[in-house]
Length: 166
Image: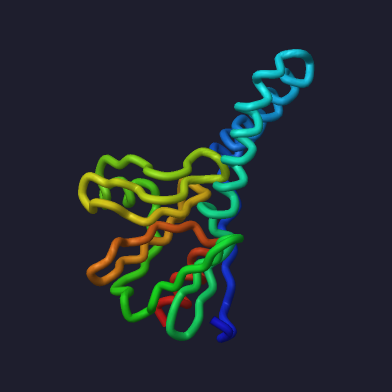
């Protein structure tokens, strides 16, 4: 993993995800504020939410995707994963409508709403897809041989796709 590569941060959140994230971040603040003013039992769910949010930030939400000559390195604060280039059969930029037609009806399994959607996306047409998105548009679809496809939102997605294809 010491090979130099080109880094692409996770894309900035789209407006809808940003609004949902701000709402969700207000929840533990509200619980803890109410607990501080005499409703002590609400401190427990408030602290639970804080711990859950930290777990999502460190274990579910990747910070960047690094393109190396032989692999993509996916980096989270507390873990890393490699996607070998030889397992990739296609990579392309897709929009929301094209994604809906590609996967059909779908349901998120994992963390969603807070900073984006991370984990698995169960889909009607494609089964389980690895998903790490912060936007509702400009997705990068990574098709893999004999493995689950990936749906991601790196910054500069056109450049990411072009670099991965070359």
